[in-house]
Length: 274
Image 1 (cartoon, rainbow, N blue to C red):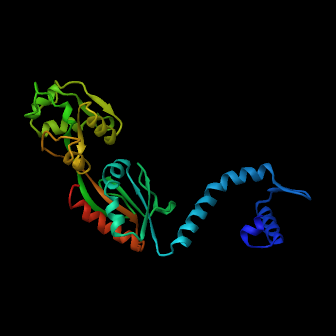
Image 2: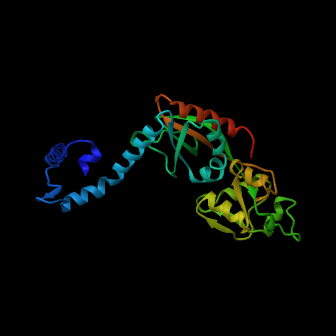
Image 3: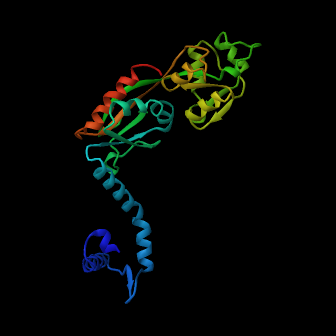
């Protein structure tokens, strides 16, 4: 059976198994006259390498089925991926059907030397070493909430009116609301106790669900504001000092897929909000 699938003789399969067992220094198969079975060591080995074998098979099938396709492996922070990139990716696919994009989400910076990722979209101060860094867009925060949250008895006519509303905080960045209020000329003292969530993505979702007012990234929220899912009661922007960047391995020659994705991404970043 194995010989037929590999298009080799049964003796060739036996020889390769023997070579692998000699290399590993252990028996992988139990052999008798009628059948061949895995040893306990062989079963453990199969479990360990099954995923790698599957990945090799998928990659091989992808190349052989369409050898003209350029594959781009991309990593992105979850918030950017879900709220900005995925809703727009159909436009890239329409322009470049010959580029297959394989995407993973990550909250930690990619080690390009230890992964198969071609490019990554990350946010920070841009002070990373030994990787190529392409600036995309600065990160600003703006207040957002669901339309249903707005209270006619306490309309949001000035930042001072936020005292009547629950403020949604990102637990690791509790300084953001005090800084935005200070920028608006308001003292944070005396504001209602708000809600804390572990990420800006969750904070924005909570705002969209009517749980209060959150500080959301203006770039990622533009589409939701445009379609009425969120409202922006004030235009004051808080500069976080961070920005979005496109990263790839230093001194690595960019493939066709990497190059066209970079050009498209930058165009989209500075283009329409839809």
